[in-house]
Length: 311
Ligand code: MG
Image (tube, rainbow, N blue to C red; front, side, top):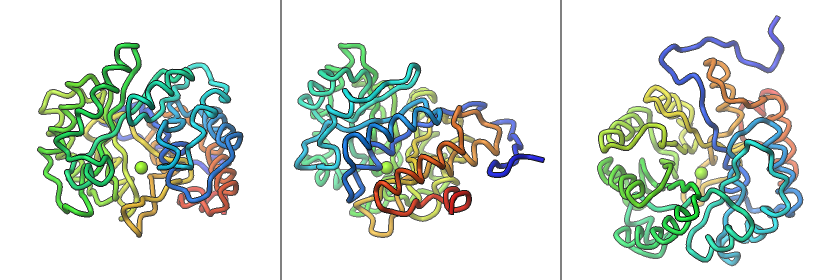
């Protein structure tokens, strides 16, 4: 008899045999939660995630504390953390000041963010889309000159609350600009969770046609309209092997009132386990961690797997 709490494994021969889960709960998740965790609790969260087998744990963000008070202790989190060998702990860095602060505490991999639309660039970055590369280029240059990996997050790749439809060619152009500037990876964000699977495949096809390698492309889905796993499967069919997700589905989306937040890591792991795709993640330990962190935040975990396995 198979043990309870695990899906039946039936592989799907054309899908990638192994996927890297890029865990964003401690950064993207916590920055969008109204409750602010203590530094020690954040550190425990990250260390628990590492023990679950997650290979990449985005740990924090070196942003202005007045803008995102939830992550004002970025330096303390990075210095207090016992880093597990083989686990990567990137941090989000919005500007050169943030890069200096991150490097000072031993961050060895960073992420920058830009927008696929002009409206969101103006609201979130305070400048038109045409000026956003000028903002991130010094950060990318500074990090690359020290040998640090740089991931480029692209927001609003599949729809924008102010502009509506986002042209695929425009998104691919932003991705190409980031790669030309020196990024080592990309994350295609469905910031408001409106994407559908055909759209995902069309965008990835266009990005590959621009000469960007498949292994630098990551996807970042939100489950607002219940499409996050369907979109993930579409990305897997396209050959994508880096998937972003957040333990417990932490993190709402401040730009969409009905948003349920990030794709939950345990929901993702359930599907990947079922497909026979290796992730290295222990699902039972992850469920336990998501239940624990939700309790620390005083909220109910939104993920379906947690509701099924730890009601
Ligand atoms: Mg997100």
